[in-house]
Image 1 (cartoon, rainbow, N blue to C red):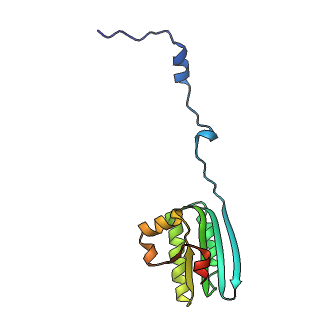
Image 2 (image 1 turned 120 degrees about the horizontal axis):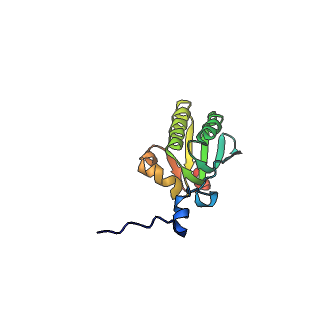
Image 3 (image 1 turned 90 degrees about the vertical axis):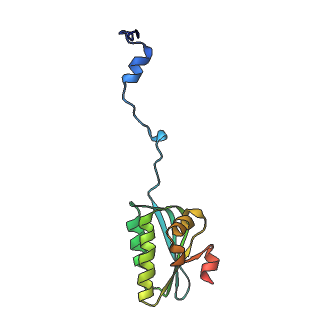
Length: 140
């Protein structure tokens, strides 16, 4: 026969009955800011530097910033300072490429490290989009 647990609460039973509440230090809260900088290194070339994370929260900012630069003959998106690139960001890149191509323009991406390069490779977009490791290479 299995003995019954004691009916008198012990010191641990009171703690177990309390709800578990996560604090900010226990959760990974992402930075939802997107930092965008536009420059024109030479006539006909616009560079849009994107830093931060591209996700559902920040993609409207990216889409709007890219949309304002679609008149450039050459748009270079420097994504080398991104900490995250979600699938919604990939959609913006493909749309930008298509819109620029329809106007006779071109899109080049500075991918930097694996954060950007990996999603592009996994989706096969490196075959569609012009990708460069550095800004210097993209501007040549």
